[in-house]
Length: 360
Image (tube, rainbow, N blue to C red; front, side, top):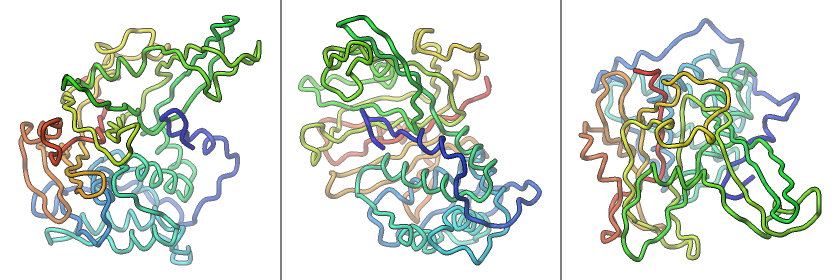
């Protein structure tokens, strides 16, 4: 499922008759009001129930995203006859409703954890992108109604067009690649040069020469020599997820703490040349994304901790979700997740989630 840093979910799109769990007929549309709890905007903590991973952080990014929760609310009343290993969407909705209605500072996601373990979900300590992909695939496989599954795909899937040009015979070919997130490899720098998200995105889409890769064999001349590989955006999702991969490529046990700054407002039309943007005519506002969430890690790959900074859609304030603890923070606090090469235990962003601003 992983190739060249991509999380390819195209195989899921090709299933003609996907198997769906049954959780009852879809009810009239409802929404979470995000009006109860300590902060009156839905913000509430999740107890750490012994899982040393980023699970709580990822669950908070789903719960606080109204577009996601609105889709999940379409499930309706769960069918108790569905076995636990196929109840992930239903149990996720039940957790959201408990978070919505709780008067406590935090709730414990025991049922979610049991459900994931019954589905043979394994948790690695550091790789937030891998866990996000596993949760996503499980949701797609178990969504009880096909139209909800399609809405989730549309909400998150980044569609890319990959082009390959053989340097031996100049033959060109292209194919569509569906990814859950854009992966940006953060490399070590001896000169401690700081990076920007904008620079990394330009580098990601810049054509590069490859040789020896499985897809570099030319379909015309059959040679496996140098191939120029390029990417462009085929279509944009409303929720754009960017993975900042800080695991060292040579030594996976090492984490790269190199400073990388990211903006609150991301305008892809100002960052990328038109050739890398969707060919169809987009409204200007569809290129503009506001930063919604930052999943951050402190410590090393073998010993560390996750927290999440989220900009609430209810009051447009930043909050830090640190397991059971939730508190208001400033944008300067969020910027601490840029990273610091000289401080190896510092906080570093590893997952950035942007949402289209609708031109506002």
